[in-house]
Length: 329
Image 1 (tube, helix red, strand yellow):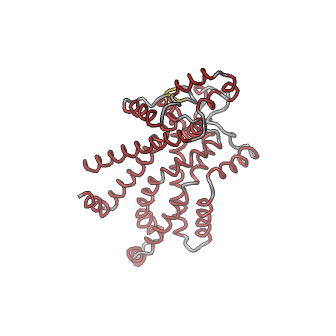
Image 2 (tube, one colour):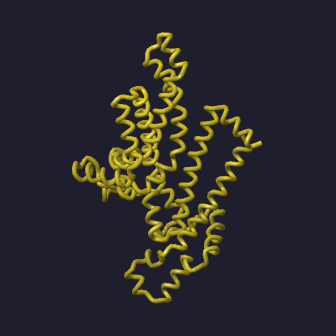
Image 3 (cartoon, one colour):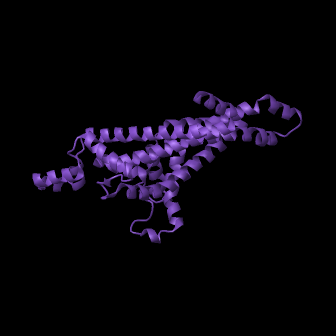
């Protein structure tokens, strides 16, 4: 266990180091001028060359890539992720505020996608070769082929603009302070983005659950249970769902990266003030410190999801745990 924990920590550290360097490199080679974008086109054209040079020196945009990265890395090792150019605040503060807004959205959509996917997969398996089974499979194929941003735009036009059931966007009503926003209003603004974001993760869980449940329901011990006179309902609940719940849960933990990636587009469409919208703003503004901070945070979330999936896999299937031990030796 100690060896596995140490190995995971080393892999995570190397991964974070590689992600931070690649992100810095991409920002450095992009044609975006951080000074011009963040001060505004008109102000940039009217200011003198000395003022422009002073801003470049203040923000460190005129330094070579390796020098900028080395300076940032030295500060990051001390716990200082730098200052955001777009928000004029420490990166750690911006990440904390945006994560607080995105956490509820990500957790709600992640849990909703798992619950809906498992339910649809179980229904399709029990009603296999029926209209319900074909409908669930067709829905999963359509959702797998549909971009998240297109679903978000369609839902926004139908449910917010035409029907008026949900707000057009944002995490709270415009002009209302955070202290005056009730949980009912927060959930009302959260409902539609969470539902659309959850649709991106339904198909893998549903199709996997369907295949595994059909395999279990057609297994010898399920046929033996039928021969003993057990009802189909008891066979499904006691033999089918219990045996497919753990694999579906492992797949759900491994899909954290898909939810985090899709949240960038969904938050942008709904103007939801979370990590996704901050990532878009940082990318368009050439805000390297904030973009690197968001990349590191999302990388850690995805790594944690995959690690939990591996741990759960080893707990459920001792053969996989034994294989990991033999590979480590």
